[in-house]
Image (cartoon, rainbow, N blue to C red; front, top):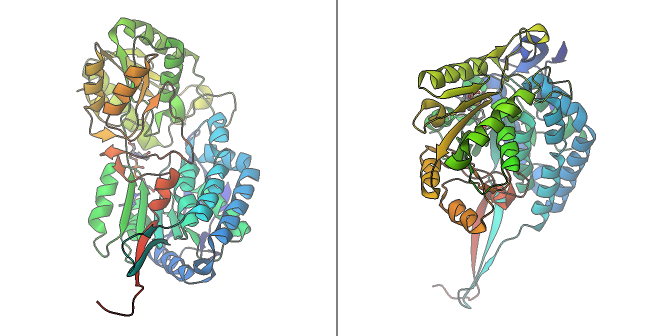
Length: 485
Ligand code: TXE
């Protein structure tokens, strides 16, 4: 069993003050595979104090170029260690290694790109008249509490920490209790890169203990959270002690629309991939596949055929397409949604069951599942399942597709497939979602803003917009005359 029995606080590896040592479970076996230090409220206090002190230490005095240099050093180390990190991420989260390798192999780009953003960011001068010189500059928000989920722990860490560090903030990272290991490996890279003590602190712990202590802390200036909407509301209710900034990246129920004039093979490939990638555990996946009636049965058949080709199994085997759900509770949640789909009359075309035979016994494995004839008012179409369950909904006209797409409390991602570029523009402009992918899906980069409308959250990650979330604008107005007023 691997051992990670220290927290990373103020540049040092320390035992928890009021936390505990917990075992973390490998979802492919259902058995413990690492011992990890979990922090309590006093550990969070200590980490926040360190982060606050670091703001006025050497870090606070660094130029943007110096911060950029450190970020690039971190990017180099990250790239050199990406394969090892991907293997650990797969053990912790159950994500298929072939996916983890591709994903983790790209994260260094976040640290590199935001290093350049730090160096090129600048303020404005504001012309008024010759009695004043007015200009804006940007200053870091301060101490950031970064709270991350278990589906893609290292990716969300990069999305939050790269812009926050580029902006000059300091950070306390609280990873999800189910997947704490790679955040501590990440802390080792931060240490090796030479960031001053206290700039990045990593404290794994239980959400209602360490997460609550961090998000309600008076010396935390901003909380950047990815997780469930209900947790975001709890965080808001608990955070009345100071006037923090918040960004929330919450759930989704993305419409993925296939029009009759689409390149059907490509569209089905993308729609099936985005139903079962990450074992269905991503908020941007195409959770509602809307298909025009004239091609509907062909698409249903395409889904059924491809479901049979998905290799489910030990996620550390690079030939496997889909690993287990990340934890037992999530598996139970997915199974209860599948039952609700059956109860509400959706047509179960494929899958729907746990996989428990042979090597899969004990793990949280489930078949890739396809429901056809789903109506948009069924529970499986309205709520986030977070499992490998495709829900196919037929439609007749473009207007109907737009109406169904927008009939959701969420507004994170969306996609559409058509060869008619006029339609592509018409439809994408009417969809209420933070992202629209046209003839592609889940194309995500460091420079493209990512985030949701409606119940999918507040703010954006990635792109220049992400950097703004970690900066405050300061306006300076200077008199050029010797008279007042
Ligand atoms: O989320 P939580 P859970 C959705 C998905 C999933 C559901 C539940 O539908 O099935 O949420 O997942 C920390 N104060 N998403 O229960 O609880 C927690 O420790 C402060 C979508 O795991 O929101 C973890 O670090 N923090 C999502 C983080 O919040 C608290 C990804 C997320 O956990 C806290 C994950 C508290 N009171 C789940 N309670 C996405 N947007 O991709 C918990 N936490």
